[in-house]
Length: 422
Ligand code: SDX
Image (cartoon, rainbow, N blue to C red; front, side, top):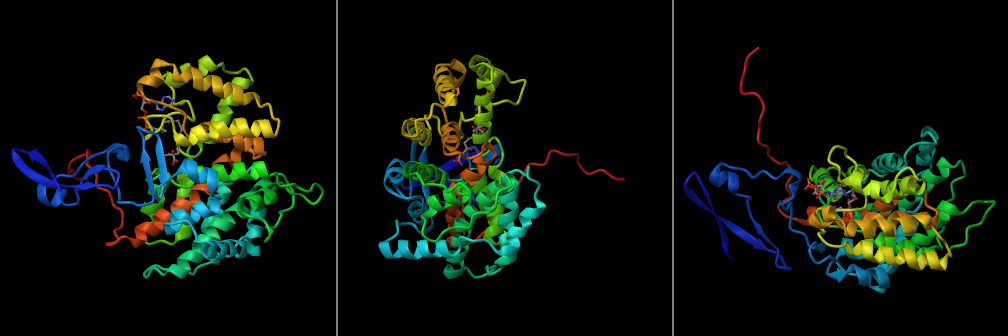
């Protein structure tokens, strides 16, 4: 394998190159400080790989996204979210027996401890559901303390993974019911993953909820498209926190908090706020675009731009098509769709965005679909978390399966005062 050569203060050093299965090349700098006394500096980790991973592959220039080698277009069309979750975590799509056992584990773990249900009495009705979700997920470590600081055992892992994937729906639905003062609807053992979530969200004793197969299919597509995305901010957070050997629940709690930020998974909520401001006449499409280009404020065109995609986010392409499909099936005429299409059209023809290769990302159309389904705006980041959870779990497991197991601890370059005395 070729090597990289660097010259520091006229001394030449060689560093090994690492090549991935898709031809990506990295300079392995794991011995850099020992051999040269130098470290690298890469604010925001724009050029830094944190691990070798076999889970997800993204080609940002070509707009390719694959989970364990399968294009997401095929997975979104032909699999269920729980099948894709299994694929991400265990490396292959489940056999019929594996699928039955996984589904059984999810069903058995769909309720939360009754003492945890009482936590909701302490949350104000206006509590943001991401604050509730992170609190409740971390509290799972109180009620289910069987985890493993030292030895990794697959049975405990399987149970923790099933508990999280199943209970996150229940916690999310309960946070919604709590916010509208309706009784919690317990999960049903006869419903599939997405149908059960919709049922817990929208069923009520006085107004039965009919599961619409088109909405159920759309929910599966939404969750599949959010299921993993390499080493994004929240996944890197789950790995870093997990590298201290804390339990999986607390690692996932940290990922939920990172995802909440408006630059990350919180963008889907901001996109709808932005489109509503335009719809309410507070802002025109042109003013919105100009504001986003103005460096004097922190406003961004939410749902646009990406650290890796320098072309159209393949997930946004699928979701944009699904907006059209579902709006026709449900006969919904959402004015925000027209505004979003106009915003996209103008932005894609604007020099500022073209020059910076800024395209719609996964968050630009997802909110419109959640809105059609009836999910409240402040729950959009929660929906992102439900989708991303299997990816976080898969990445956490891959880190535990990697030898040697290393705690994450980046270096820095100090620029503060030199030694001084009181
Ligand atoms: C997600 O990483 C992942 O994989 C994330 C994700 C996942 O699945 O986990 O894909 C999910 O988080 C999608 C992104 C959701 N966030 C938003 O939609 C918020 C709006 N987007 C931006 O904040 C931004 O594009 C980021 C945060 C997504 C990416 O930021 P980068 O890679 O640090 O890029 P940058 O801020 O350095 O931008 C480069 C230039 C800058 O201009 P200049 O300084 O070169 O003049 O592009 C500009 C930025 O000002 N820019 C934008 C912009 N995005 C970038 N200008 C206006 N509006 C935007 N949306």
